[in-house]
Length: 254
Ligand SMILES: NC(=O)c1ccc[n+]([C@@H]2O[C@H](COP(=O)([O-])OP(=O)(O)OC[C@H]3O[C@@H](n4cnc5c(N)ncnc54)[C@H](OP(=O)(O)O)[C@@H]3O)[C@@H](O)[C@H]2O)c1
Image (cartoon, helix red, strand yellow):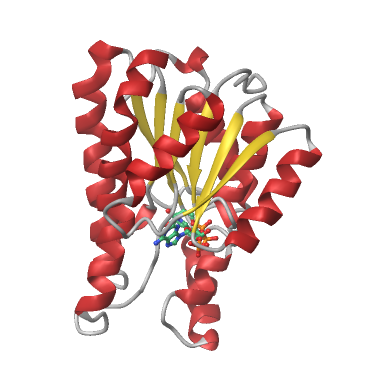
């Protein structure tokens, strides 16, 4: 795979303050993009901004709670105001509360749908005029839990299945406009998300051990291993790729 090229492109990365989003943001600036870093924690976004600036990148920090209805429009407006346009949207922000049907309460279910499945629709809608103008690209971050049945993450898996479904529908809808929509579906990645899944730390460790054992390559991924495929899908040289769900999961879904 060639080095991704995003020179003079502007990309929004949600959830850019940690994990996969941070790796995508740093990689995108390294590839030449101006990047809008979106999330709730300003300090985390500022830390990512420093990493981006250290590789010569231009960034904008947008503190926003994507569960709020008005957030998407503001994120896009501030980005276009700063950079003069918009080429790419990476819907990466998510919350995860794991468990079966009796373990996850309504508040957690609604919070997950709001951020993981509804915010990407709002962001796409708000970004669409600019994406059409730029013949841009969207990459949604799914999950093996949305690809496969996930009895131990039933509501989270449902939000990710919704995101993967909208990826394929939007790809068909927007292909004539030359706006591409793809998804990367990670397996298990070492990121802070595992600290907030609503399970005790020892249960998380057990879960990660069993997921490692279930992953054919026998290990968990680092965020950069996911980010490189996100960047490749953003690159306009991937112009014939749309509606694809790319499993980057060590063989978990094979
Ligand atoms: N790690 C894995 O094993 C794994 C596996 C499959 C898929 N994924 C997916 O990969 C993506 C990135 O997750 P990650 O593993 O890198 O975890 P992470 O480090 O926890 O990243 C999630 C990001 O989402 C942001 N976020 C959460 N709620 C938000 C809200 N209401 N508004 C705005 N931003 C919000 C968080 O920032 P703030 O807290 O600052 O808002 C955080 O930076 C997610 O879509 C996740 O579902 C991860």
